[in-house]
Amino acid sequence: PKPNDERVVLRQVASQNIAAIRYSGFWSESNYTEHKQELEQWIQQSGYQASGEAIWARYNAPFTPWFLRRNEVLIPIEIR
Image (cartoon, rainbow, N blue to C red; front, side, top):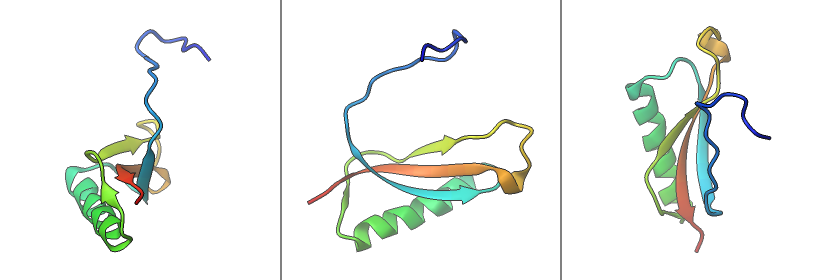
């Protein structure tokens, strides 16, 4: 669907495999770093290899209570 807000931009990206870890609460750099390290450890232990930089995803409106907020750390991986 076409966005009805000019600040929203759609772009196509190439298909890729992504490892993800989900957590709740307010976003903070320390919370992000903690979960990023946990995901990096899982990737290594599972025999995968990161193929790009970690990115964060936040899904909720600013007024959402902290315990209902959903955040993710996403890391592209190579499957050998």
